[in-house]
Length: 322
Image 1 (tube, rainbow, N blue to C red):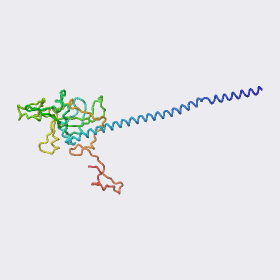
Image 2: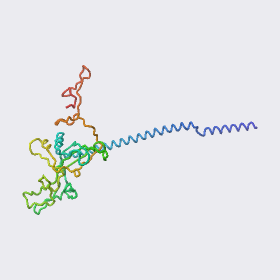
Image 3: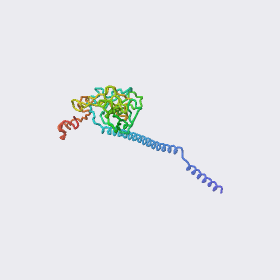
Image 4: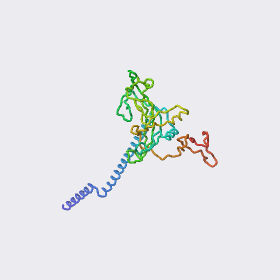
């Protein structure tokens, strides 16, 4: 009887040990589990970080492409109104006679290079408010209120067109502490003609022709203005001998000079590549192509069998070579 009781206790004790052994984890099992969990979590975190970094780069790329496209669309719309566009030789001529803004621009350390210059017609709608003097733009009136008075008759004004000179510059600041990047940016600059009193002829109607809107003049200019031109603006002259290009290349600014506080440079896009200029693109000779993409001539594939392009006018030159 006692023997059976002892055997029963041993069985119960063994069962309890088995239950205790199966109810937990050993230290080694816990360490292995932690290593596996760490590896899985680390892999997931790395994947998440890479995913966020890729998304950030794609978003920045998309925004850059949108900004570039917006700038290109703006320039394209601007050029649709152009009546004359200067080529490389024209820009060279304008720079030679200091007709365009030259670096440094204004009182800053901003250096600039004109890359696109053209003349266009600017529309002032009759309901637009316009400053009579761009230097002191506090007095503004609607364009339709630019009236002339001949005798007792007032002439109601309408839309007005004037010529303007537009230039797109590649700008860069020497001062790295500015708000702009250390690369270049594209900026737009414009000067416009004024609105003259074309209703009254002060010579023929002297004494009877009175300007209702205050007239203004400037030195070296015989015109009488309702609205003064931008500082430095002068009309182009197409009279005289020579081709249209030669005449337009002779344009010079007005003697009063430019005012960068009035005619500001408006940035379109920043972070433009400012890689050092390569003479491969332009040899500096007037009349030569400003951009030349040279493709080397066809060369024999082997020492004996030539590989010439029969479609080329000159089989010894590659397509695109000037």
